[in-house]
Length: 393
Ligand SMILES: [Zn+2]
Image (cartoon, rainbow, N blue to C red; front, side, top):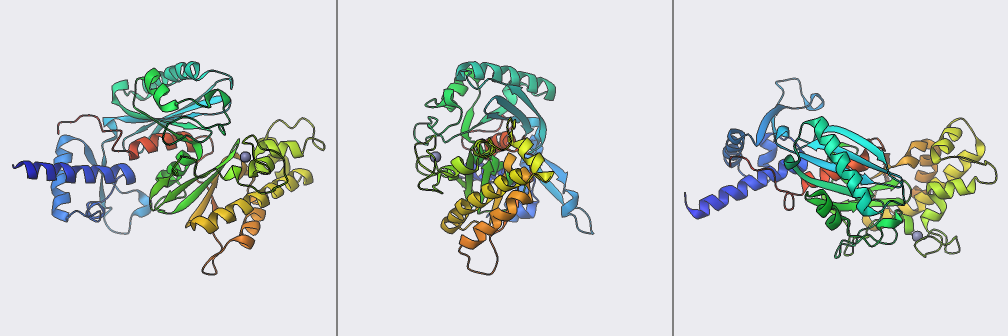
């Protein structure tokens, strides 16, 4: 075989493996749709099957027609794993997925908000060891670790920005520090960005090429997927919807701005608005529970929060024109009490070419796992920085 032929074969193999890493198991026909001829796909798949890199699997039930179920080709899940981590306010979550996009387990530990990054990473090391022991994967089978942080990460320097709600991590290069302590390849990204990737891989945005994911947690952030790829902006701060101005004369935000969405509609702001009427409310979960039981004050503040989020979403929609907006995080659990005023507020301000009101849909993944599994999915999708474990080819 000539050097040119060998290079072409490697390129074709990378394209097939890249498509499987992005989309999960696919039919040979769909793989051919990615620009390779059917005969090339057939030859590459045969080679990868022989090496054990891919396996044949039956199509999931939902996509079956009345005839014979199509046979799909997917990465061999037993070859290796990806690890997702979410470093949050008071907790760290971890998840282990196979290369076949299968979630094996997720776990959570309590970590005090004041804990230093180095000490947090030592606890994470123990969490990873414990999770891997339960899944049967050795550490050298981990393709990479995707870490979610509750704040923006500077694209050029990798440093965590000052808007991060976890203060000991501000100014820290999470990727570099975690790489040193864990001894594994690492990526670090904002929690909303990774949640967007999770919904694109397993949830409400599966198959969508242009969408926004709004993550309403401690702060409100958004992840943008434009033309099939995550858009983080020139500096890595794209999607900070929580810091868009809603009231120019409003309260000063921790970012230094005034009247940001976060000062009006994040869980802390909602609890503050109820501090006179409802003393000692422990969390937003309790506010949502009371609202569902008919408490007028709790319903009112959640509806107001929905209206404010709707204003910010309409501005975002008018700039980006996403196909759909997915809402996730703990505020999304308020359901129609928050969503109805949100959609009304947004529809009044959104520019749309047709008669369709821009759709806002709830995320499909549980709020406790959506971010952490997004870290694992992001590693799997990044073929450049996270090569697959060595096989026989
Ligand atoms: Zn702000």
